[in-house]
Amino acid sequence: MIAQEQKKHAAVLKAINKAIKVYVKEIGDSSTFEIQSKDFTYTDFFENKMLIIKAIREGFPYNLFRVIKEVTPFSEDDWAEYLNLSKKTLQRHQNEANYVFKPIHTEKIIELAEVTNFGNEVFDSTEQFYLWLNTPSYALGSLKPAELLKDSYGKELVMAELNRIDQGIFA
Image (cartoon, rainbow, N blue to C red; front, side):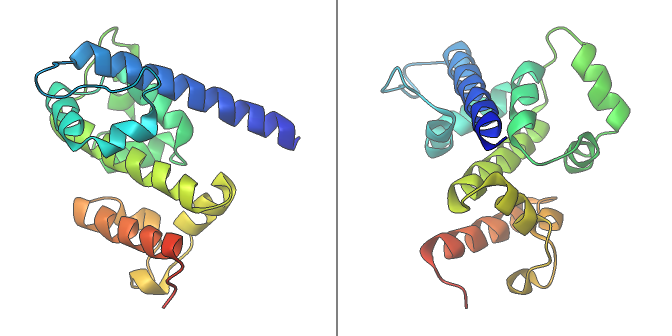
């Protein structure tokens, strides 16, 4: 059972690395940024702030969003709430051939993907991260970290708390 989950996780990571590499090539402008490696990964994307800015301005295609959704713990309802869209609108975009999200929505998608990526690195398993995300935290005013992800300031609080956990600072 565990081996199957590991294989599925590896396949999802491979798919997201491929999708982000294709997207970055599509929006690429060598004068703004340069990808240093053929092995450019999803994690590398979050480390290049200029590339993130470019991606926000260009917008994410729905196909990339679909792959990102697979690695996040959020349901369709959660995504609709975070993006301030109706679930029906999200489903309609899914059926549009070349739909590209507006910059405001792309920025939120990137923020949530960044939290998930870092959270998965901090915790030993995605299950532990998802449990933490949905458990009230004294350090976060007794709110669930997932509740704070609705806005940028809340996302920064969640990232700071993840960083403290990563560094072993629990007080």
